[in-house]
Image (cartoon, rainbow, N blue to C red):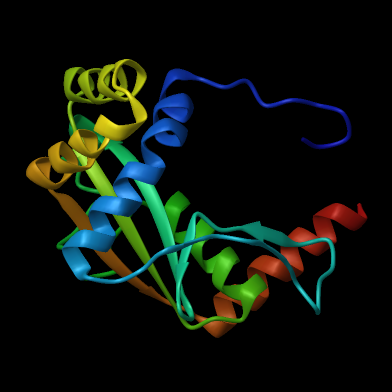
Length: 169
C-alpha cells in the first residue's frame, strides 16, 4: 500500500500466497533444513527502503515463487543453482539483500502449468488441516527449482540509492 492506494490481487498473486507455506515445507523436507517465516526489515542507511522476506534459513534469504511452465521455458531461467533468473526477480532479491545486508538468497520456484496450480489450490481449499500434508507431497513430486543469488554490493547500493532518490522526489 502506497499513499492510500491498493494493489489489485490477481489469480497468480493469490495462488502464490496460498501455496507459499506448502512450497516452504516441501523445500524444508528436501533440504533437511528449517525455514523460518520471513520478517520485514528496514535499511539502516536508507530508512525509506524495506524488505519483507518470504522466509529465512540462518543468514540466507528464502524467496518463494510459483512459476507458470510456459514462462519458465521462455529463456529467462537458467540452470538450477545459478543466478540466472528473470531480471525483475534478480532486482527484487538484490534489493532484499541490500536492505538486510546479507550475502546470499535462494529463490525456490515451483514450476507447473496452470491446471496443476489449479489442482493444488483446490487441494488446499478442500482438505482438512490434518490432510494438507498431501499438498506438500504433491509439490515434492512435481519438483522444485532452486537458484542461488549472491549480493552484488555495487548493484545493491545503486538500487537503494535510486529508490531513496525516487522517494525524496
